[in-house]
Length: 297
Image (cartoon, rainbow, N blue to C red; front, side, top):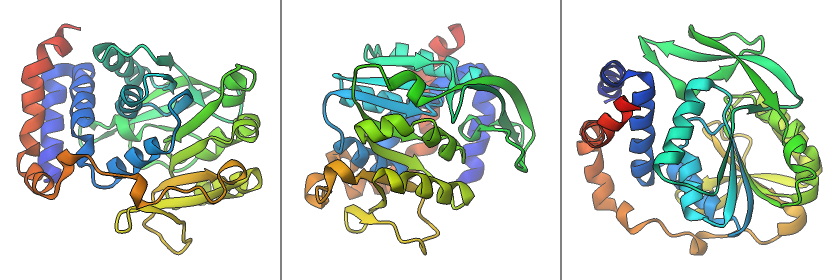
């Protein structure tokens, strides 16, 4: 299945061009996200924790998949989507326009600990551009070659500390650069105590995030698919990837349980069983539907 998916990616990138492919892939992921049994379920639960008004920051918006899902669920929430890599930002802009979202503010910049210029890489693996693992080149060893870009980093405090609105949520997926995003958000985190959803690999970066957030009143939780609720993170769990940080100072004892979360009726067991049988053909269907738009634009 993995080889087949990569083959489809390779074909679509050559038929549509990279920008056309990104648009088709983003649309594909948006309409199939409910069947994502790992991140899909976790992120949908994160959305149930947020109030219906305020500011949601999407740090590492990539090609707009979660931006669109959040904006469509919360029309009264202003989504600030930050994406520094030019190809990704162009696709993000197009998908927001395609869905006619009026509550999304786009920022062609990344987020970090300070305002600066950094270099980012868009990896190329087996001839396939992998926009989902684009990352800052900060001296760490990297496994793949690719296209490098000079991009601008800003800070959350710079944008939102004196903005007048309340930040109610922060989604962070910046490929092992999360601690720097949190360092640049201390004032906002102390003032607003937003819920945080972050993808954290098992690395020094994860431990640095814990050390930074704990003094601000945050506890690390993970979504238990078996129990359908958040559970306190066990540091012996090497498989944990999608983290929730609970703002204890304002939500002590108020964690939702399984009774507050219900999966979409369309994700019932029979559809989840059948979906992998048809998923390889879905990109082709989407190509037929919006491929001409992708190529033309």
